Length: 174
Ligand SMILES: CC(C)(COP(=O)(O)OP(=O)(O)OC[C@H]1O[C@@H](n2cnc3c(N)ncnc32)[C@H](O)[C@@H]1OP(=O)(O)O)[C@@H](O)C(=O)NCCC(=O)NCCS
Image (cartoon, rainbow, N blue to C red; front, side, top):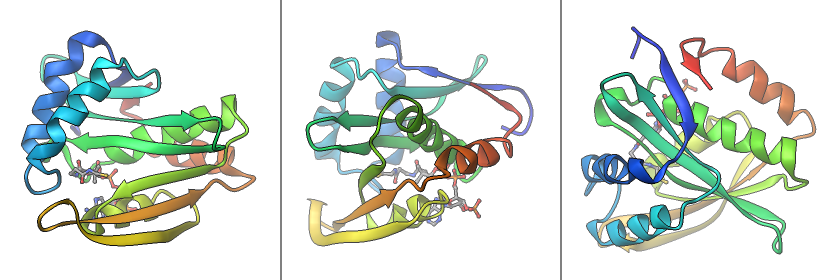
């Protein structure tokens, strides 16, 4: 990941199997196998604000996006996952920041929910925005995999915070 350009682009139907492979690589540690069908159905719905990160010839390294619920005035971070060999190098953060940027630039929504696990909650907490725990629930995803529901609030200067953070990843092309 430190060599070569990683490109971030919108999800295409032909990415379906590669996204499911990212899921499989992170299950059962972070996702329950029972969630696979739900993820496949999500992808089949051609989510409009779902991104993938790829490096030439090595396939997809990560995917993740944001789903907007205009009626509720809220958004949700959805299905963010990074290939195990590419984790902790900023890809997850960049995908989430781009989702947040989409919100800031295109909508009036500033509140984002993340249905995650206690294991991955710290990642969302480190995006740079005020974050609170809404709810914890044992065995929510599957036995042994608990829910931690987070609410992330984008501040007034979110646009600047996002731009500043994205500058830290010059090898990523969006
Ligand atoms: C969680 C996940 C998406 C994070 O993406 P990533 O590319 O590995 O993480 P990043 O490098 O962007 O991390 C950003 C920051 O969060 C921290 N972080 C990442 N994962 C973390 C974790 N599991 N626990 C604590 N901190 C974490 C990083 O250390 C980094 O900290 P910094 O502010 O010091 O730089 C990725 O590790 C993953 O795919 N995990 C398995 C699937 C999963 O749990 N998805 C979330 C389901 S809701």
